[in-house]
Picture (cartoon, rainbow, N blue to C red):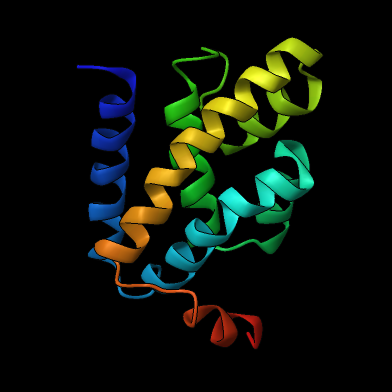
Amino acid sequence: MNLDQARAILAYRHVQAIAADAAMKPKYGIMALKLPILVRTAGLCQALHFVQSRGGDAHEALLGHLAEQLNRVDPQIRDAASLCHQVRHAKMRAYLHLTREAAATLQWYARLAQSVLKVDRTSEESDAQH
């Protein structure tokens, strides 16, 4: 199994668990669509803190899922809080590596939000009103 397959398998497991929770599904899915773009435009640290600032179980779950994925890059990343801490304090080389890995991983969550959770870009408008 290659790295991209490992990312996909774990992401699928995470998204399947969210699909069973009607309350978390839309917010998780919408943020999963937004997060890869946020990472590219604002940077990993700002994107993670934006999601964290939104609060709520769905956003915390997405950060926790990303933390589980990035644990393979940095074993000190165990949950959402340690993810934000490690990214915030990373040296440039480590920060760039975490950013690349997060971006590659988040693409899977965005794809699965569309295919499994059935969330699309038009759903974002209703999220902005909440």
